[in-house]
Amino acid sequence: MQGMDARILVGTAGGLHELGAPRGRSLDQFVGRTVTAVARDGARAWAIVDGRSVWATDDTGQWKQQASIDGPPATSLAVTATGILIGTEQAHLFTLTDGRLTSVESFEHVEGRQAWYTPWGDPADVRSIAVERHPAEGAALYVNAHVGGVVRSRDGGRSWTSMIDIETDVHQVLTHPTRRDWVLVASAEGLGMSRDGGDSWQFVTAGLHAHYLRAVAVSEDRVLVTASTGHRGKRSAVYRKPLDGPAEFERCGRGLPEWFHDNIDTACLAAAGPVVAFGTEDGRVFRSPDGGARWELAAKGLPAVRCVSVG
Image (tube, rainbow, N blue to C red; front, side, top):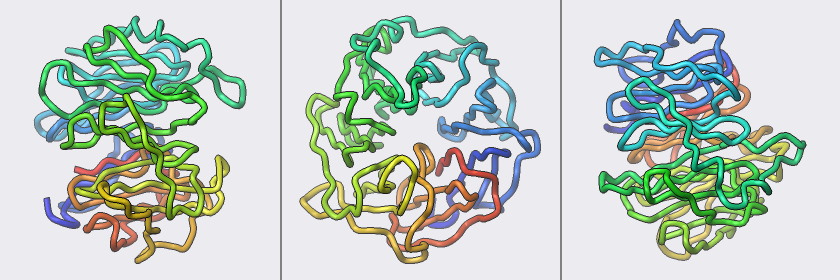
């Protein structure tokens, strides 16, 4: 993958769009439908549509429905070594294996679950899921409940451990693509970084104009985040910094507006190698070929962006 040849999938409130090689296109079967999550499994792509169905591409690249979802709508998904992990509203978790959805019952009994909440009074949701990207058996699973912190499983989902105070208000959890046991969170308290699988954390805010973060991505040796002054999204911006060393965050500016007026949300910032992309509530997608140093407008006029994947 080189620079702008990367394939970018953009899920929106009105369909799924593909940017990049060979050309940008809208996928007809999803027009007018909300695509709330996308994930990749090598050349295969997965998506949650309207919170009620799971779709995936086949060997020819055509999208086919894989399962229907009853009960609370689905919010997020991730690829694991044994199948697809799906999170829902009201903080439930399911696996999809060979076309069959199965509840992860152990997740219903996570210690401290009774304290999970939302500020507006609804039950907490599964907001994001991350999987350690190593093939070794027992690779860790990380699930972010909002508001409920992050819980970890190192035994394939049979048991779970809470890793972070729920009042940290985590909005996204991410594992490093190549560094084992590196976990990152975008939270209301800044960027959380763990090098030991979540046993200990360092929070970083230096250089940010505000420490309320909604999204996080890793591009080679840099981490990127989206920051704003709060949940209403005033004065939102994208920042980057080296993963190693004491350097502060620097705001991404070349090719970007000075500020965005809405939060650049969970799952709307993504990277693969040097290529980074993010989408906005007002239907724009920006793309960088070099880890966030330079940007260009890749699309505009789309429905509100709900998720982005780069591959």
